[in-house]
Amino acid sequence: MELSSVQKDLISIIIPCFNEEEMVPLFYMEMLEIMEGTQIVDFELIFVNDGSSDETLGEVRKLAEKDGRVRYLSFSRNFGKEAAMYAGLEYAKGDFVAVMDVDLQDPPALLPSMYRTLKSGEYDCVGAKRIDRNGEPKIRSFFAKSFYKVINGISDNHIVDGARDYRLMTRQMVDAVLELTEYNRFSKGIFTWVGFHTKYIEYSNVERPAGKTSWSFWGLLKYSFDGIVAFSEVPLAIASFIGFIAFIVAILLALFFTIRTLIFGNTTSGWTSLMVMILGMGGLQLLCLGIVGKYLGQTFLETKKRPIYILKETDEDLENKSDT
Image (cartoon, rainbow, N blue to C red; front, side, top):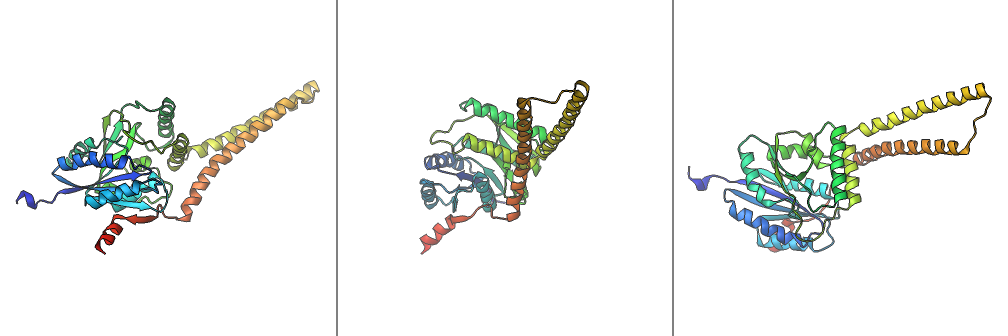
């Protein structure tokens, strides 16, 4: 059989974008070197515009017009990175599919090594893991490490500390991920939950060359809470435990004050202790209600069966316009 007749593997690269007009051209130039230098496979770049308010969509359109390997999806509004990744996985045609951030903190140079590892047949997924957090604010690094310790301690899924969303997966694993159609998505947990054999490649942290991240501290904190709720029921057990302990303490205090009054003939006095008890118990009740409410809210959103995203435009629309 001639070499020219052998069909090449297709690698789909999913790139979520939110207000990244500066980074889109830079990312494309980096990927162009990889695509031109790797002749044994074909590539398609799927940019997912997540309701950007800048010229991100315009930059992606330009790339799609000049390079047939560039495809794009554009949402009707901002649905979040999780929705963008899911949409990209749905539209990817590749034999292997990668998820990458457009900020170049996911080094494109790792892709050839990832591909060779998967082609060996030993693994179903190759992920990227940072070995340091140089350049990241210390408070953010502290909370990130704390999050991994907490979620790995209370969940059956083990999420690797430092692991990025950046990974190359086989088509079988991608299809498995797409079967999880939940509205509240936490991909790091989903990638672990579906199983499959994963290898992690370590690399030093890379700072973005332009623009700024759209992830705020509070946004990351909320995302962390969503991940814990999605993959652990331990917070509900904690709420029950707190309620039980508070009930026992209340009984013991009641017995203590009753016995003291019978023996010493003193009535219980002291507004300070009373207010502390009321505020303490009230706080515990609100905490437990908040935990239960979080789970109830997630369940409420799931039962609505709303779409994970809504498309406004794709590269196919661009092709149709050019044909007319």
